[in-house]
Length: 126
Image (cartoon, rainbow, N blue to C red):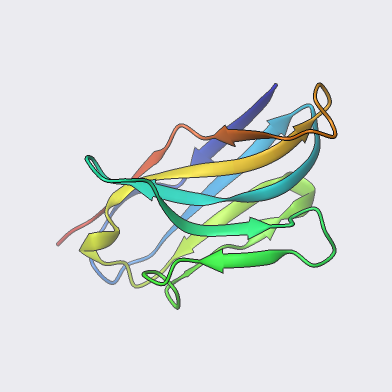
């Protein structure tokens, strides 16, 4: 079994910064993708940033145009942890941010399964 544990959400004024973290734990063999989505009530889930081919020598990073230049997605591979560094936050960034991971666990390796965190609220307002 694999769990994703998120932390770091909260409230901030426009122009401020927040850093989210997400750690995958459990019987993990490999993590091939890890990243962040966000979803507001009544809206579809939106990709924010993701690292794919995360278990490869040349991982790829995809960041949504709406946050490019403001958000980055650093990671700590040894800890199966991914972060979302959010700078220059805007009111339209207010959302529930969910961590995502594509994981091969001991039970199903080499197959993979998608996992989601519980979500953390980010609120940007003055």
